[in-house]
Image (cartoon, rainbow, N blue to C red):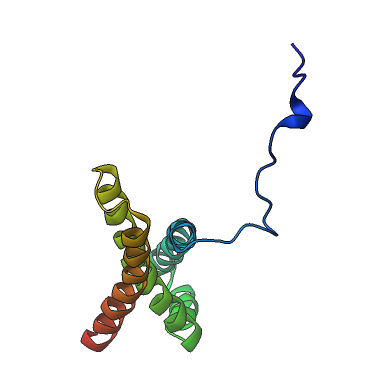
Length: 127
């Protein structure tokens, strides 16, 4: 059946007029870090496969992963792991019905970024 009131309904907010909120940006970042961590997992599996293949192939892959670029990827991955874990914990808290007020949720978003950075820095110093 045709919708006769189609033109009278309000339009969804468009990206050009919608102001992103801290909670939405934080939620998107949790998804991005999850995908990035999958890529990191592939790099680590590639490293294991290279180790099982031959010493020459392992030297090439190990050289790449221990170069400055590989160190940067692993450092960002360390931060991403902590951020992703904190994001999952935040969602469990929300699922239990706590901290869903806008002001509290925004403070949690800022806290996630800060705590992930602190935990990653502690990890870098410890290693």
